[in-house]
Image (cartoon, rainbow, N blue to C red; front, side):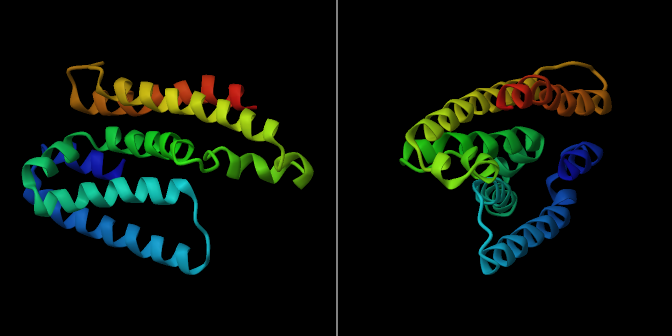
Amino acid sequence: IILNILSEASMNSLETMKPFVLIINVILILNLLVAIKMKISTYFMFGLTGVAVLGGVSVFAFPPLGEIYLRNIIVGLYLGLFIVAAFPPLFKMKPFTFEFSVKDYPKAITEGQQFLKINLIINYIWLFLFAVAIVLTKVQYSSDSGIQTIIAIVVPILLQVIIGIPLTI
């Protein structure tokens, strides 16, 4: 979100954004390394960090792609979330929702097939919500770029709060 606001303020100037992209990528990579060292690994950490770092690398290595990334940072966020929801089930791994729900139930329940199936359903609901969020961030709500940025950030969050959280519960 910080990069999105800075990008809008600099009118998507690639050269102006490079120092900010570098600082944020260094912080993300350090955070990832510390988390790995502490044996804290989540799909979110890898998915979101991966998309952000790849976007950051594109700013320096492939400037035309980097410009697209900077103009669509929030889309990148939801793309990372979409990847987090989409890929684990494709590779027969537990869905990202599993790591949240497993804390609330005894091991006898969490090791059952029914628990996994319920988590897959919830995972696919979130997958759909993240896909819709990608689209909603690109909808033109206002001709004013500041208002557009705020609405494009708030609308997908509202969707997730109003639909995603209650369905998950």
